[in-house]
Length: 374
Image 1 (cartoon, rainbow, N blue to C red):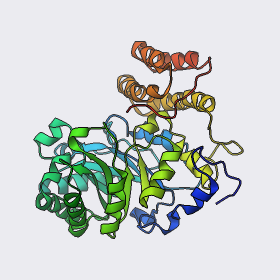
Image 2: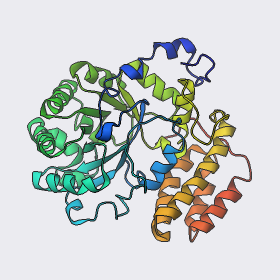
Image 3: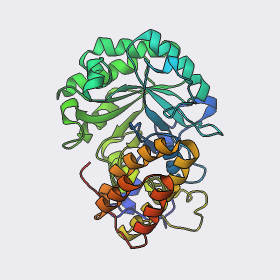
């Protein structure tokens, strides 16, 4: 670690020295497709309407130069994938040069659909495959997908075993704490996922009825890591660089997964890298990561313009506007006057008009809040 590195406001050098070295983490020891390895302690969550190719390009623009992590697709239906041209649909577009760090996430519970979906996904050469056991929405529950799978350890283990028979890459499970608060059951469940063939798990420690409300129980992440030998990635209540480092320190988790905060603060990866002594992102050499509320406000405008450019590159005008509005619907919440920006995005008829509205909005200084209600 570089002793001169800037440090997130809530942590000091002594605290940073106490962090478990990521190079010694279980996740860093996993080998993915074509020898890809993770050497950076933050992953980017699968998020509906957000985790598409343009968003992933934005995130990568803030990764420290030479670092590698894992990014996920939006959740993909195993019922639909078999009839689609993977790589040629908005949910499965990938960058022309490929994405060696990409992990598709599947909503799945039947072997015939799992096997065909995995076969179709070979078209984009995924680094791994993730099974969704965390989605709490009614549609997923009605099909016994998502967090519904956590209601039966045997059934969920069977789903992972099915996937294991067809997935040649590392296989992960992203889960919640379950349908109800029951820590012993959760520990048994995670051990069962390991036994069924999962190579790592990501735990968002909230139960299904909570949605995104209430406090995520980070204590469960630490307990989970104690009962299995596979990597455990923590997720939940991560909005700042301080939060990322605090979760690793408090839980000992192998990596931290950032979700919706990345729609407002995609440079969190730069901030963490800088604190840990990594180089700045390519093209930002000689610059420091934005830290103050004012610096973050300026960077949000810059990030939005970059994002609009990438939406124009990969999506039709209608598809691009839908994704831009959805992105800003989340990210604007960290800006005190973000509702005005959101209103401009709803009025813009196309991406050029949206770009002009972003440029006008950020002619004036804006500050970013460290946290907001997700």
